[in-house]
Image 1 (cartoon, rainbow, N blue to C red):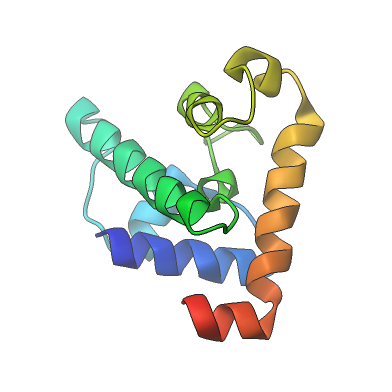
Image 2: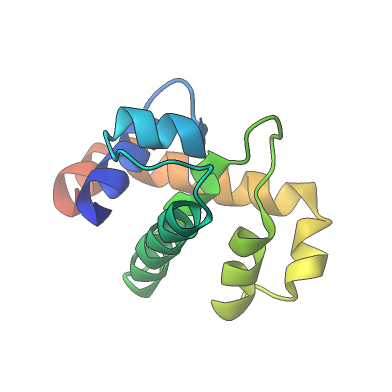
Length: 122
C-alpha cells in the first residue's frame, strides 16, 4: 500500500491537479479503503504520515502536503502535527500560516517535476 500511495502522490506532484483528496487517493491508487470506517481512515492517515517521514529522512519534501481534506483546500491537524514532530515548529502556528502549506506543496512540486529527481528517487 505504501508504494502505491507514494507513486500516486509523486504523479500528483508532477501533474496538473497538484492536490488530491483522501477519497480520490483511495480510488486512484486502488486501495479499497472506506473513509466511513474510522480504523481504515486512521490506517490511511498513518501510511501517508509514514511516507512523509521517510521522505523527510531522505531529504525530500513531504508528499503528504499534496493530500487535502475533502471540501477544504487545507490539511487536517495530523499533517501539522507531523510537521511539528519533524521540527518545522508548533503545529498550531503552522496551521495558522497559509504560506507554510503552500511552500510545502510548491517544494514538493518542484522537486518531483525535476526529471533527475524523478528518475533517481521514484
